[in-house]
Amino acid sequence: MDQTSVFIVSAPSGSGKSTLVERLLSSVPGLTFSISYTTRSPRGHEKNGQDYCFIRTEEFQAMIERGEFLEWAVLFGKDYYGTARHFLEEARRQGHDLVLDIDVQGAAQIKQKLPDAASIFILPPSREALGARLRGRGEDAEEVIQRRLGRAAGEIEDYCKYDYVIINDRIEQAAGKLCAIVLATRLTRQTAAGADPAANDPQAKHWLELAQACRTASINRHVQPILETFSSSLK
Ligand code: 5GP
Image (cartoon, rainbow, N blue to C red; front, side, top):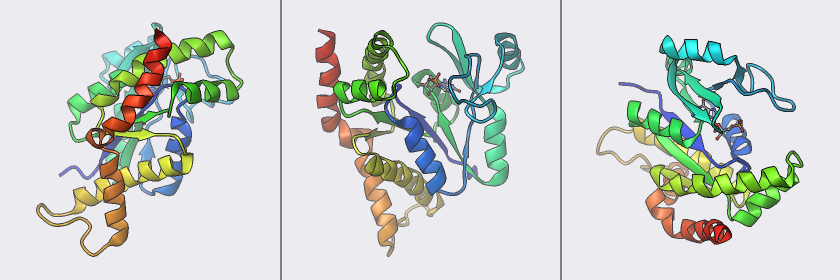
């Protein structure tokens, strides 16, 4: 039986996903982060082999031909992004779980190949909050911010394809939820069929309840008002 769980995390740009993933990796042991390959240029302080493996388009295409990717996608009409199989193999060898920070297209490919993977969508609390965060980063011109907001409106409609949704209104709470999803998944995996994963363990019960509350079906009614802040801005 495969003891490695795969966690897919997706979000519109500016939703605080990188911070949440960093918190997860520093709080929960036994996780391997998959460093994606991309053909886009490094930004700011990004380091090759740490944030991404930056490669040329010809190299990326050769990797596709050799079947080295678990999934790959072309984003923004030009840049290739992909998850290399060797990260999953490495996680399996080490008995770790694997965390992927990938887009919606990649998430769908992984779910097809690995149906047990847990997919998590991070949502900003509103369009206004996302706009404020993007402006606060001071990285982009207003025109670029408007484009990112427009794209986010399309991306967030895909939230319903994910197993879990985390609304990132308060970073501490959102980080706690992400950790709880990972820990609850592990607990459930390690518990024999029919047994109670939280038997006599209040901490385990807390993780399971927190994770359950993030299930897409449980959180739907909280998501609708957020979607409305995005759709009303398109009118
Ligand atoms: P950025 O260029 O801003 O770092 O990332 C742009 C988008 O690419 C983000 O949504 C990120 O999750 C996604 N992404 C990063 N790595 C991969 C990957 O390996 N595969 C796919 N499909 N998407 C990725």
